[in-house]
Amino acid sequence: MRLIETKGLSVRLGGTEVLHDVNFFLERGEIVTIVGPNGSGKSTLLRAMIGAVRLSAGSIHRAPDLRIGYVPQKLHIDPTLPMTVTRFLGLPQRHKDTDLRAALEQAGLPDLRDRQMADLSGGQFQRVQLARALLERPDLLILDEATQGLDQPGSAAFYRRIEEVRRDLNCAVLMVSHELHVVMSASDRVICLNGHICCEGHPEIVAQAEEYRALFGSGTQGALALYRHEHTHLHDHPQSHKAAE
Image 1 (spheres, rainbow, N blue to C red):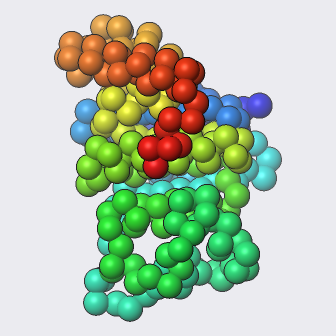
Image 2: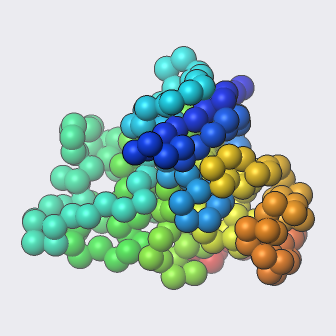
Image 3: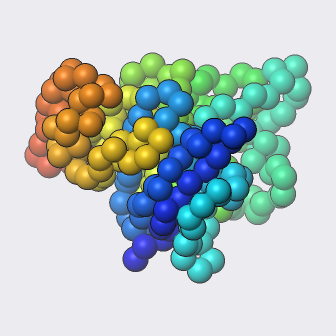
């Protein structure tokens, strides 16, 4: 089932065409990652999909009653403002206590309801944002460089959690990431964007594409090797990633 589909999507910002003739779709249960250089229109595409940016051409077709959860690239909270995790999750609307507990459990933070937002680590802060998105019980979860600022173990743990969320909710996940090793190990499909879609497909196929190598160089073999290793490792030892958390 296609949850969302773009046809001929184009966006102009300040007189500059940022995106041109973008055609792609997302199906329930798949994880798709968008990669591309700075200024390639990745965040603009995500914002267009949630209705925050007006299209200059093309269309976006959404499944009826599509629920979208969105984790932004950056969110600044004044560190002097007293705000607990529970209060943050209750903005802009309150939720049932059982729903808050369930979302925090899914995000891997079952015991942080009363913690001050200013006291959270980077990884905890990102997971609270994830919990906030999960309160919508999304059909589509969108993450805009959600691990920016996290170290590699923190990023790996966060994306393992995303895989569990996908499995538990049977939702689609659309991510933007600069971490090529994460792209290769966590995605069903990769879309290489540079104002338009340069190439797309299974990670192994995209990693070999000339357009991808032109943007990221030939140093993607390490990422591809890690992709193969992790998928083989998961197949042989399905509990190993869960234990690592």
